[in-house]
Every structure is written in C-alpha cells, then in structure tokens.
Image: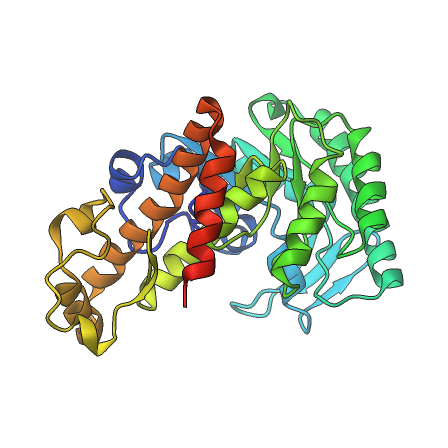
Length: 343
C-alpha cells in the first residue's frame, strides 16, 4: 500500500496512483487526520474517500505508532493514551473506543485497533505488559465496533504485538484469534530491530493467523524484502520508503539502488531503469532527473516517486503472478540474488 499520511501520497496525483500505477488501496494516518483537519469535518464533507477524491480502498491505521513515537508528549494508562498534539500542544486522549469512532467517521474500508507499539530493544517484561494491554484494548475496541451502527462497511483488524519475543507473539495472536476479526495485522516491527529478526517474528506470527483472512505486516520493507514477507505468509504491507527515498534522490531499480545525485549520471541519457515500464522511465533520462534534483525542482519528487512506487507495486504484481504460475520459489531466488549483488 502506498502511504498517504495526510490523505495524499506526497508529490503524486491520485489519477496517477490509480491509472498509471494501478494502486488499489492506499494508507492514511489517523493521528494526523484527527488533528488536522479533524474527523468530524471529514465526516461532514462525506468521508475520507470523498474528501480526498479517492474512489478505491483506504486503510487507516489507529494512530498508535505516531502517538508512541512522541515519547515525551504522551502517557499510557489502562484507559488509553493521553498525548499532546505536536502541532499546538493541545491535550488529547486516544482510547480503543475513540479510535474506532474516528475511523468510522472517516469511512475507512479497513480500520486498525489501538495497540501499544514499543521501541526496540525492549525487555521481556516491558513487552509482556505491553502485549497484554494491547489484547485488552483490542477486546474493548472490538466490542465497541460491533455495537456501532453503520460499522459493517469497515473491516477492523487487531494488531499482534510482543516485540521480538516469539512466545509473546504467539500468546498475543492466540488471544486475538478469539475476536474472529476480518483480518489481522502484525505490528511493532521495523522499529530498529535487525531485518532477519523482523522476518522471523513475522513468520512466527503469520503461521498462527488464519490463511483465509488478510495478514498485514505494518511498515515494511525494502524492495527485496517484499517477497520474503510473502514467503512467510504475509498478504499486505505498507512502507514510506518508496516515496521518502524518492524525494531524497534514491531510486529503486531492477539492478539495485540508484543515487541520482552522483556525478556519473550528469550526461547519462538512459532511463533510470531500462526494464521499467513507468511513466518516468518511458520519458526521462538519468541526466534530466539529476538536473531536476540538484536544481531543487518539485517535478523531481513527482517523477522519482512515480518510479519507486511502480517498482514496489511491480514486485507485488510479479509475486502474485508467480504464485499463480507455481514459479514463486524461482522468483524469490532471483530477488535474493539481486539483493546480494547490490553494493
């Protein structure tokens, strides 16, 4: 899922997301949209789909990750999370019930339950207490969701936590399975832990979750990691890397990472990736993109983001296709070989 934190994937028109890139779903951020422009305004204006003019699916996270990243501005209690806005310092409370209400006001297709996301590393006791609170919050949020009128159009996913401790992940997953949810998410990864450990925790958790329902690993990963997560049972992923790295001049290609500011591209007339079918690679050279980047032109961010998102979505298209053809192991081997050959 391309990440549209504020209801927009930075630098990219929704038309291009839909028609050029073929994105069927985007992610928006509950924390940011709750603070500005506010969920009640979005509700009054017809919901998030109409407000941002996006006709396809939208997943909104619970805002938990953003709140917990504000360690100096929040306090965790059994009731929920009390935090101060990073915009103006106003005090707010997120509870398992209120984040459900906010996302129902958005009209999200998929909403996430409030969870507690720990930094890495965490002690076993910290992770245990956090995981148990996440389970209690999930039960409260699920009960509230099922008592709300008009909630049927929104799927609600609980989030498996447990830091990097496999037994805690197992316990959390087993507890959340009793909620019989529409899908399940795996959170608390990509918070500084080694990538091998992230993959291990994702695999341990995914094995316990129902294969007939979506399994969503939050906040991952690099291009070569996407098929690795799929091989471990993951169906859905999101990450800011393709758009954030694009704005910083890093392009992901079928031959590895391309740093466009490097002098060797000054007179390079070739496209960023000769085997890529995106609008950028069909029309523009490395030399032109380098010029735009060094000149600080806004167009660079748009063209680079289009390319990086195409690369990510194309990897997922190839993953789906090779699974259907029965050649996914060979595809995964090629992706691994490319990753090993990158400098």
